[in-house]
Amino acid sequence: MEIFKNIRNSQRLAKWDIRPIDVALFICLVLTFGYALTGLLARACEILSGEELPMNSLSFLIVSGFGLQLGCLAAWLAFSVISPTENENQPDSFWRAVKIGVLGFIAAYLAIIPTMMVWRIVLDTLNFEYELQLPVQLVQNGGSNIEMALMTLLVVIAAPISEELVYRGFLFRYLNNRAPLGLAIIITAILFAAIHQNLYSFAPLAILGAALCVVYRLSGNIVSSITMHACFNLLNLVLMVYFTPIEA
Image (cartoon, rainbow, N blue to C red):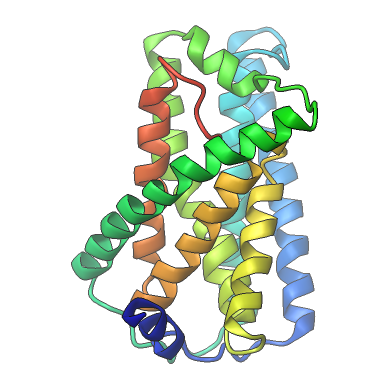
């Protein structure tokens, strides 16, 4: 099919000239900044509120979420300074990348819906017990206007930016042109799905992860996968009021 030929032949992502040691450095930076910022934000909120944040509260979820996402962003910026490389990509323009991201979201969601249904049937048949994750329960139970606004900001803006920089902007970009295209996409998609720690959402999120790699490779612009990821999270957040969403 023409679309698969375009994906395979797309050269908008040039080979990234970094070493395996740089990969280890980036992972260390993500873990260090993520842990440090999560702790600092939690401590700051406790000082301002005068009480300890319960770990099963929406406030703690928001604070830890921002800590992790901002940690990933800080790690990306620090890595760019410590290990700078020339960007030889040929990316699409901003608005074309946004368009590719929106179209990619529509196409991917059409594949995710049947995948989710089949995957759930398989797991139910194998007698795996479905449990609604605590973050989903907390959001569905609602919170103050400020908490819900911050949660929306976290889910729709912060998470798509930081996760795309890590999984597509770093991991997939590193594997692209170093491994067969299919293997690079599969590795990135599996790690992306696994990090969410939800067996029932694993297959749908793997499909999403693969689609995010595809739109990034097609456009050469990380804006495309950020846009697609943001659309997915926004729709999920809206559906969360009525249905059990695919956590991302």
